[in-house]
Length: 114
Image (cartoon, rainbow, N blue to C red):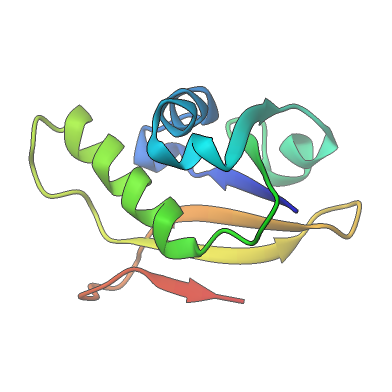
């Protein structure tokens, strides 16, 4: 099972940083991540970077959100990260892409929208 993830540049987190952290985390025992270059980057905009997580089983969005929050917190020197949202859209190849963006609304927990 593969999960394609795109990162909003407002989060100041690139696919490269996410992939490195994922592959060094405990999640890498059952999955691996890689930077993904394809037409979806043009579809979403040139400033968007994407990654693919390949795993034998489905990966809950909460695991991805937790790692993104941890990485952003490190970049902000321990400050509280912004609220994030995962929007699932279909790419030009009709495959789903999880787009991680800074939430426009103040919510207590990250939300998953489809």
